Length: 154
Ligand SMILES: [Zn+2]
Figure 1 (spheres, rainbow, N blue to C red):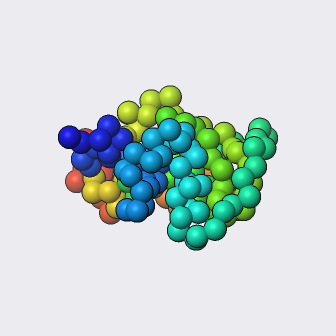
Figure 2: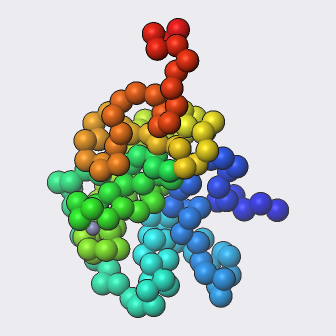
Protein backbone atom coordinates (compact mmCIF):
# COMPACT_ATOMS: atom_id res chain seq x y z
CA UNK A 1 0.00 0.00 0.00
CA UNK A 2 1.36 3.43 -0.96
CA UNK A 3 2.12 5.81 1.88
CA UNK A 4 -0.06 8.90 2.06
CA UNK A 5 2.98 11.18 2.14
CA UNK A 6 4.63 9.59 -0.90
CA UNK A 7 5.09 12.12 -3.70
CA UNK A 8 2.47 11.86 -6.40
CA UNK A 9 3.75 10.74 -9.80
CA UNK A 10 5.09 13.81 -11.61
CA UNK A 11 3.96 15.91 -8.64
CA UNK A 12 5.91 18.68 -6.92
CA UNK A 13 8.05 17.33 -4.08
CA UNK A 14 7.31 18.69 -0.59
CA UNK A 15 9.32 18.49 2.64
CA UNK A 16 7.38 15.45 3.87
CA UNK A 17 8.21 13.63 0.61
CA UNK A 18 11.93 14.39 0.65
CA UNK A 19 13.04 14.46 4.30
CA UNK A 20 12.48 10.81 5.19
CA UNK A 21 14.06 8.63 7.91
CA UNK A 22 17.20 6.77 6.90
CA UNK A 23 17.13 3.04 6.14
CA UNK A 24 18.16 2.15 9.71
CA UNK A 25 14.88 3.61 11.05
CA UNK A 26 11.30 2.51 10.61
CA UNK A 27 9.62 4.27 7.72
CA UNK A 28 7.11 5.69 10.21
CA UNK A 29 9.76 6.99 12.66
CA UNK A 30 9.08 10.66 11.87
CA UNK A 31 5.35 10.47 11.32
CA UNK A 32 4.70 12.49 14.49
CA UNK A 33 7.32 15.12 13.61
CA UNK A 34 5.76 18.19 11.98
CA UNK A 35 6.76 18.32 8.29
CA UNK A 36 8.75 21.57 8.63
CA UNK A 37 10.86 20.03 11.42
CA UNK A 38 11.83 16.87 9.54
CA UNK A 39 14.65 18.67 7.73
CA UNK A 40 16.40 19.15 11.08
CA UNK A 41 16.36 15.42 11.87
CA UNK A 42 17.31 14.59 8.27
CA UNK A 43 20.25 17.01 8.35
CA UNK A 44 21.39 15.74 11.77
CA UNK A 45 21.50 12.21 10.32
CA UNK A 46 23.52 13.37 7.32
CA UNK A 47 26.15 15.28 9.31
CA UNK A 48 26.04 12.92 12.32
CA UNK A 49 25.73 15.64 14.94
CA UNK A 50 22.99 17.52 16.76
CA UNK A 51 22.09 21.07 15.74
CA UNK A 52 21.47 23.85 18.29
CA UNK A 53 17.71 23.98 17.91
CA UNK A 54 16.14 27.31 18.76
CA UNK A 55 12.49 28.22 19.09
CA UNK A 56 12.93 31.88 18.05
CA UNK A 57 10.61 33.09 15.29
CA UNK A 58 11.69 35.88 12.92
CA UNK A 59 8.47 37.73 12.13
CA UNK A 60 10.26 40.49 10.21
CA UNK A 61 11.37 38.31 7.32
CA UNK A 62 9.05 36.76 4.75
CA UNK A 63 10.27 33.82 2.74
CA UNK A 64 8.46 32.99 -0.47
CA UNK A 65 7.99 29.40 -1.52
CA UNK A 66 8.75 28.68 -5.15
CA UNK A 67 8.82 25.60 -7.32
CA UNK A 68 12.44 24.90 -8.19
CA UNK A 69 13.29 21.84 -10.27
CA UNK A 70 10.13 20.09 -9.17
CA UNK A 71 10.41 20.88 -5.46
CA UNK A 72 8.76 23.48 -3.20
CA UNK A 73 11.80 25.48 -2.04
CA UNK A 74 12.43 28.59 0.08
CA UNK A 75 15.71 30.45 0.53
CA UNK A 76 17.07 31.68 3.85
CA UNK A 77 18.61 35.19 3.98
CA UNK A 78 21.96 33.34 4.38
CA UNK A 79 21.38 32.05 0.78
CA UNK A 80 20.88 28.44 1.82
CA UNK A 81 17.71 26.84 0.49
CA UNK A 82 15.67 23.87 1.54
CA UNK A 83 12.53 22.02 0.60
CA UNK A 84 9.39 23.32 2.31
CA UNK A 85 5.72 22.36 2.41
CA UNK A 86 2.37 24.15 2.37
CA UNK A 87 1.25 21.62 5.01
CA UNK A 88 3.53 23.37 7.57
CA UNK A 89 4.62 26.75 6.13
CA UNK A 90 7.68 27.37 8.31
CA UNK A 91 11.42 27.03 7.75
CA UNK A 92 14.28 26.63 10.22
CA UNK A 93 17.61 26.97 8.43
CA UNK A 94 19.95 24.06 9.10
CA UNK A 95 22.92 26.07 7.79
CA UNK A 96 22.77 29.22 9.95
CA UNK A 97 20.45 28.06 12.78
CA UNK A 98 18.39 31.17 12.16
CA UNK A 99 15.28 30.23 14.08
CA UNK A 100 11.91 29.93 12.40
CA UNK A 101 10.72 31.91 9.40
CA UNK A 102 7.20 32.11 8.06
CA UNK A 103 7.02 30.78 4.50
CA UNK A 104 4.40 32.29 2.21
CA UNK A 105 2.78 29.92 -0.28
CA UNK A 106 0.40 31.01 -3.01
CA UNK A 107 -3.31 30.94 -2.20
CA UNK A 108 -3.71 28.43 -5.00
CA UNK A 109 -0.99 25.82 -4.35
CA UNK A 110 -2.72 23.27 -6.59
CA UNK A 111 -2.89 25.84 -9.40
CA UNK A 112 0.86 26.53 -9.16
CA UNK A 113 1.59 22.80 -9.19
CA UNK A 114 -0.77 22.31 -12.14
CA UNK A 115 1.06 25.04 -14.07
CA UNK A 116 4.23 22.92 -14.13
CA UNK A 117 2.98 19.35 -13.89
CA UNK A 118 3.28 18.63 -17.61
CA UNK A 119 7.00 19.44 -17.56
CA UNK A 120 9.79 17.08 -16.49
CA UNK A 121 10.80 17.75 -12.85
CA UNK A 122 14.07 19.46 -13.83
CA UNK A 123 12.09 22.00 -15.89
CA UNK A 124 9.45 22.73 -13.23
CA UNK A 125 9.94 26.32 -12.03
CA UNK A 126 7.31 28.68 -10.67
CA UNK A 127 7.68 31.94 -8.70
CA UNK A 128 5.33 34.17 -6.78
CA UNK A 129 4.89 37.65 -8.26
CA UNK A 130 6.23 39.41 -5.12
CA UNK A 131 9.28 37.16 -4.80
CA UNK A 132 12.23 39.30 -5.88
CA UNK A 133 14.73 37.44 -3.69
CA UNK A 134 15.07 34.08 -5.40
CA UNK A 135 18.50 33.90 -7.02
CA UNK A 136 17.34 31.35 -9.57
CA UNK A 137 14.40 33.41 -10.78
CA UNK A 138 14.29 33.59 -14.54
CA UNK A 139 12.90 36.53 -16.51
CA UNK A 140 9.20 36.37 -17.33
CA UNK A 141 8.34 34.46 -20.45
CA UNK A 142 7.69 30.96 -21.66
CA UNK A 143 9.06 28.07 -19.55
CA UNK A 144 12.79 27.52 -19.71
CA UNK A 145 13.82 26.00 -23.01
CA UNK A 146 10.35 26.28 -24.50
CA UNK A 147 9.34 28.62 -27.27
CA UNK A 148 5.83 29.37 -28.42
CA UNK A 149 5.33 28.32 -32.01
CA UNK A 150 3.38 31.56 -32.44
CA UNK A 151 5.26 34.61 -31.07
CA UNK A 152 2.04 36.65 -31.00
CA UNK A 153 0.60 34.14 -28.50
CA UNK A 154 -2.05 32.78 -30.85
ZN1 LIG B 1 20.25 30.29 6.83
